[in-house]
Length: 282
Ligand code: G4P
Image 1: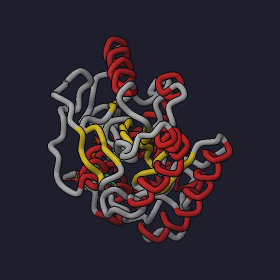
Image 2: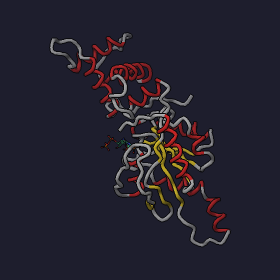
Image 3: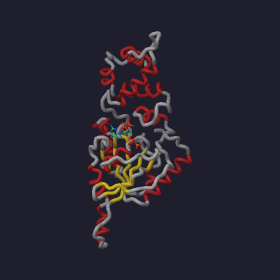
Image 4: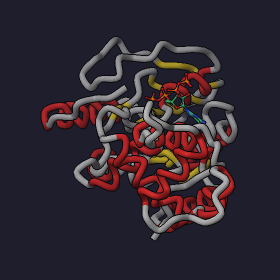
């Protein structure tokens, strides 16, 4: 689902997240493991201020494992705890509660020292850009299906706490934040991974970006998937070769570049070219 992010929407989204922060002990910042920087809100540090936070690299099942490890070290160097998870299958999700407990142990120890015998559960909020997997993770943590709120900033309903075992409660409405789309490459990466709809950017532009990236970083996968002997220098020739091999042709027999673009992007998003990461830490 795509949101039109006008300045007013951004200000409102920020305000809504900041309102929710008052209710919670810890934030789970959900990022796409394939594009951790491009799937990040550009104002996140300012919005979250000093609230305890865990970075969750979601869709890690689709990302290059070795690169995800590098990202975890990258965030840890910035003193941010980071975990790789797959919300769809549930991999790594149990660790979230353990890590949150560890992070909040001093706060809760202080509560205990004040004589509070049964401390309340930790309260958590998930934040992230659209399509990063917020609802999937909420359902995973809840162990049941919670209806998705309209994916629009400003669409509100009564907030409820979802129990995650005995030790944690989660706000059922996540904080929806915007990506850094003033950067063209960020937009192309979001489109390549399917985070933004294909109607927003030109499909062929996105496929050109994706194919150039694969050519540079995953040439063997590209060759294998499309049975190429070599990868042509010229991107149009690469489109031609893929189109010919896959029968993406127009009625007169000419290559249908839209079809090639659609095919390549679909295959990237459905892991036909294996696990791919489109960003590496600097
Ligand atoms: P949002 O609330 O942040 O907007 O995202 P949502 O949970 O709706 O997830 C967006 C898409 O990403 C969904 O796919 C969801 O299944 C998928 N997804 C979420 N987490 C993971 C993950 O860890 N691994 C993988 N591989 N996919 C994940 P969809 O195609 O939009 O819908 P559907 O396939 O669930 O029908």
